[in-house]
Amino acid sequence: MWVWIIIAVVLVLVVLWAVGVYNGLIKLRNLVQEAWRQIDVELKRRHDLIGNLVETVKGYAAHERGTLEDVMKARSAAMAGGQSPAQQAQSEGMLSQALGRLIAVAEAYPDLKANQNFLALQQELTSTEDRIASARRYYNANVRELNTRVETVPSNIIAGMFNIGRAEYFEVEGEERDPVKVDFGQRDATIPPPSGYAGGTPAAPPAGPSAGEATAAGPAPTAAAPTPETTPAAETPPSTPQP
Image 1: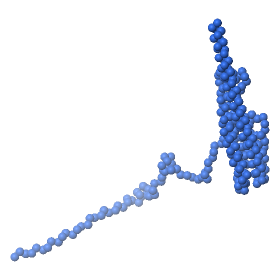
Image 2 (image 1 turned 30 degrees about the vertical axis):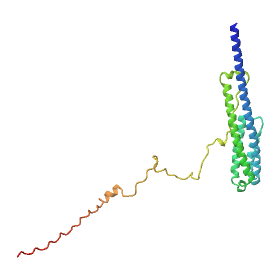
Image 3 (image 1 turned 60 degrees about the vertical axis):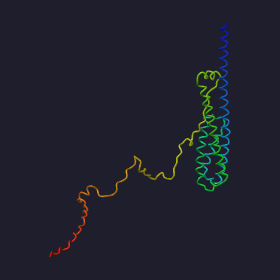
Image 4 (image 1 turned 180 degrees about the vertical axis):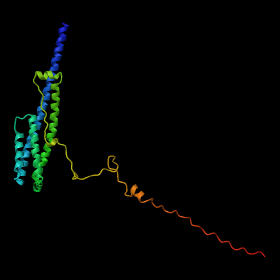
């Protein structure tokens, strides 16, 4: 009798554990999907801003047709539906590279750089990029948590039973991963090391005749020692004869 009771209690505990693990996995999966929807909203806003930016640049630099077409092609590829997070990340990376070339072209047009609409679009685009970066960090954190649960024992057993798989990270590849290059216009300048630096070139000795030159010229003349001045002896008065 007691044996059956113990077995029933163990079975109930196992079922409760399985339910808890399953609910935790479903919660994480929902968080990943919600985080991705936030990224998707910001990406759509980014695509709209880039389209408006291209139209603004076109009004000042219409002859830059190649650069403008590259941006629009990359934008169309990024806006294509049905992409996985990894595919979307690759498309957004290509769009970022094309956008960087567009901004570089715009730098050559002072009137365009001073255009209020162009400046406002750049500011909005920068703000959107910041929100995308924040949403991407939140999404990847949830993906990491879900993948850890899916791959580790014993929660991987429940994940396999209910076909709960790993999620893909959203990591944009492109120029934003390159190290920042800082140049203050001194790239070609030769900057001497500080005097106290051990690896630097020691300071040159003061100019003067070398040892060989001094020997060939003979010993250097020595200054004559000053002779003490002689004080004349005091004259003694002549003695007077005694009477």
